Image (tube, rainbow over all chains, first blue to last red; front, side, top):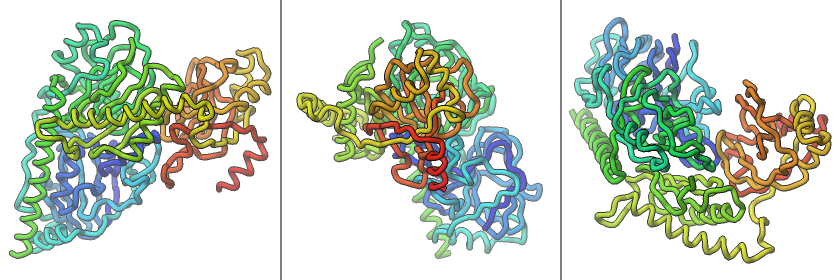
Length: 339
Length: 247
């Protein structure tokens, strides 16, 4: 199957789970900003989990499918539709050749993920298909998708082929056919609701003055428009260290909350630089990074302090959930085959 | 403020081993010794590590660490890294007592640079700022070896230690919007090379025809932390021949 980009949307890029292992060379780990969601929609179309899909930001693209294919959409709700009919989220969908999938604006969340059975087939660069916009590598020519671009999907796994055949049998000649099973998205919230982001104390927490330490973990912060795949700049109570801080550059992490001298915190995300030298007040729990990645400019969040062992336990819980999901999908696949 | 020395967790997926709070050759020897140990004997669950001026950060997957019952993964990872740190300190201190080993480790990488004119629009400024001639700046810049303390900021960007204070120069008041890849610059008492094109405020004194970022190779960069670098002046015609050879 081929995907023809009729309209690119605001920022649509090819992303997989990134390229860890190269940070010592200054290469950003990158990858989907909401990796749990990419893995989930990959699972729905019978992929292994780490296949490349499209990350679609705020205003979505229009895509024509040349050839029949199997897709699933998850994450933010950008009101996807085919032929005027809404395409449900977090479901396997059989699309017929010639169908045009159109996304609108995000009504909840910030980033949608489109998985296709077999994954988006672009060459791997440094071990990954993710687009690194700053280094201009990976994905399609290292850049966001443009009108007229064409992408191909890779080979279907046996599981994907089973789902495909099952939906083909239910096809009634319409441009798309929806699987009868779906996964609820427990993370979905009303857009105006304040999000809670769990975080641990950062390496320089004690260097901040008492007022800043208190404010950070109790007062709300707003996502500013100066937010992107490298980091989210937040507006709220200004944060200051007790003394002037001169730091020797060190590695930074995804989720590090650093504070430049003007006092507004920045949460570093997947496309961050590998090293930094600003004081760090906190570190967002890995399990809550997708919460930030799904926030739009203007939305509010509050940081809540957690201990490291609690953050790690939450991460293990989520991982167990994803594994359980893949087992269930595999069993279904088997049933479809036999039935 | 002084950074704490030791091994500490950084959130739920990394730990940092810090040997000091300044840029210093002896501190960096310990960084290199720990990096070597991590390469030879990575702790279970470690995904990657990033050496810096005075620290090494180890990134790990908490799901792949296998701690004893009742011990959280981060504590177990700290303990494993602490053991490597002790070995690294012992070996680095041993090496410091052997003068012949002084600074001789690490690969020596020669980087050809065409200084001045269109490639080094700020060479004159750096010279004037330091009451030198452009030729003296070139001699001072290319007349010594530099240590790659760390790679960061951009893919393959080396933080180099050891530049002569006599050619130090402040950053430009307003950064250039586009500095071409390969540009060699000075900012304060530091020198560096831009591996990819991008905005930048360093004083540009020359350009190398050699690619520092090589996404098709592994590792994807010309330089690695711990290398030594020597700048070799080349003429404009040598530069042009070099780029034709690459094409």
